[in-house]
Length: 151
Image: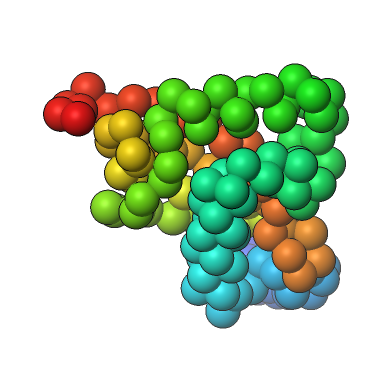
């Protein structure tokens, strides 16, 4: 009888602790209903990024990026890297396929892998965005030339 009473108390305590921890989640951006919205925001940010790259507007890319992106390299170095990427791959043409994942945490991250076609061939792009309040901002960008380039 004593064992069953202890189990009841333990169960009740566990339920209370779980309810308390769930109530501590105050960030609305980590609710599951926002995942589709975060993915859509990242898709739009990728379109803007490609448009700005095609226009050679690396200053706007830099200014619109997250603070960690801007702090990881000075503006001139980052601008040279982005311009070199544009020179190497040419103008962006289209995304052939993409996969987006939302990583819940603080901050929320949206990671995208895009198989893309550029003027000078095919490439795989990796984008990492972070969500600050309502916007997604570029945190990282990497690009690799695909081995099956036939241009």
